Length: 224
Image 1 (cartoon, one colour):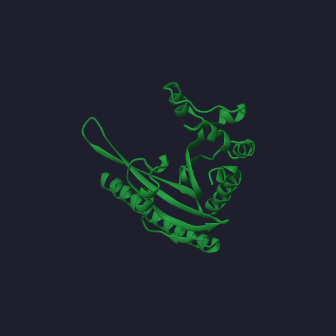
Image 2 (cartoon, rainbow, N blue to C red; image 1 turned 90 degrees about the horizontal axis):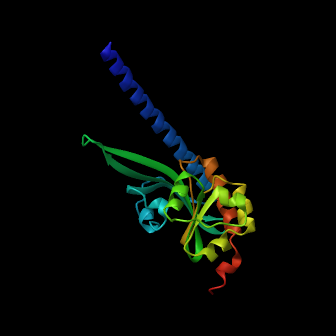
Image 3 (cartoon, rainbow, N blue to C red; image 1 turned 135 degrees about the vertical axis):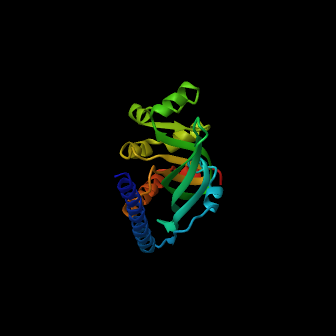
């Protein structure tokens, strides 16, 4: 009986690997089709340079063996954008000395800005942010109590945070509470917790553009 269980177990693993490979290939084909339709360039290969180039963004600075893949680049709505899947891994050792490697994958969007800005993070208000506040990592409060309850906003430059989180931005984010935004230097970025489908990528490219449109234009002219 035991050999049969082993055979079944191995068969399940092989079937899962085959299914995963087929799904990954189908998704690459869909991304290539999307890129062609939007006039973007598509490169499915692993790209370690993006991890180094944008390593100042917190979401891309986690773990080890960091690389982007399935990269879409080019002009979208007159803005330079980069969209890619991202991988990193972490390692842990149990009490018996056994080492485990955990792999993490997610989708990431970057819109390039014409000038450099301070660091700003707009994330979901949750248990981790509340724990951080308890240790002195306060977020910035806004007149909208609903917005302050829904989002955790952090920046060393409070005026900049208030400029970004203007009335139009707050209204948009309250209607799109799943978004997590990071700005630093010349990058406006969105992070998602998993790899998105081609349809979801196009939808979130549109949302990234909507966020860009809500950035006050005086921020781009006041230092010129």
